[in-house]
Length: 258
Image (cartoon, rainbow, N blue to C red; front, side):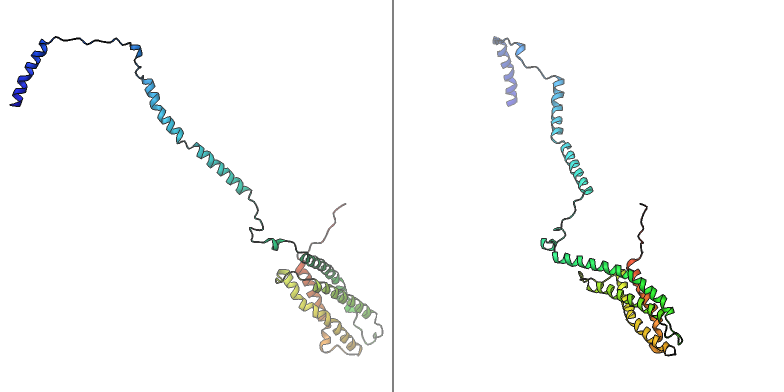
């Protein structure tokens, strides 16, 4: 029913509209120059490309790359020229690093006395060697007991050797100690050899006197006196070894051409 009535109403409405006179609407003349121009393809392309350009500039990594290169160059320069650690970095306090006049004085005195000890020790090798050589001619026989020239020469040189040896030992013993650390290397051997040549320097003249008295009495040395020569040679060898232990390799001074 509704659709039939609607189809019947539409023809009648069209007939009425054909009988009604139409009124023309006034047309206003509009200048085409006032209308905005349509965007050209060129402007559209430029507008579309502007956004990516701004996005690239905003998120550019160039500043970060430059900063990274600067830090890398500074790190390399620091590694090439490292600054030395300070005393505080090593755990030393100012009280521990301040100079100690008393300790410095002890060190200077020890150094001075040990230098004298070393020089005297080298000089002492001369009378010790001469005493060993002259001992071969100091043995008297029964007929030459009154002629004691060779014996006197031998005894005199031996006395000089003993005196210089005692002076050498004095400077080593009296040198102040600056450290309680045990000796090492050549110094350790040097000190061990003292137990050989020091008793030998005491026994050698005693045994020599006993041996001389036995020979002058007309018989060979007996008892411990017969070891006078062996003890003397052992003492000389041990003394020379103690010098080599602290001086090896030995460098002899040489004077160049003037």
